[in-house]
Length: 145
Ligand code: NI
Image 1: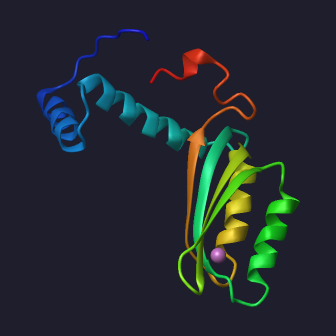
Image 2: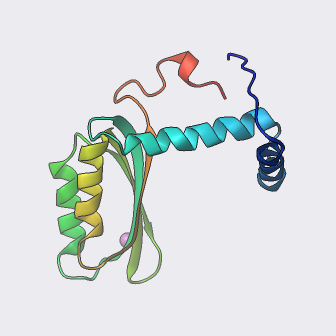
């Protein structure tokens, strides 16, 4: 960890303190670090070549004709992106899947769009995180908490 000193106006400082209290941060530093991490996530969108890890979640009706098979085939076709998938049978008809993906943000987005746009897939959500493919946690200095 490096220590930096920043100068901000009273309004912004009050905002940081309100956010810290509302979200339960233990310190201003952790609140500000999380804001910067949010900014880093926005950066992922800037270039399709940015390495990332991602979670893709969606609900689908497994009785929709051929949908379950097509979704599985899609994951096999992109086995290089698909790290793992959690499947939950929500009720008699609906399934929730959470797929962990790793690759460039362009490839991950294209895969997610292809799943979310399928007829019968609902509540699709892609959450991208910065991370280098194949070395997400190998560097101890990249994981400070
Ligand atoms: Ni199911």
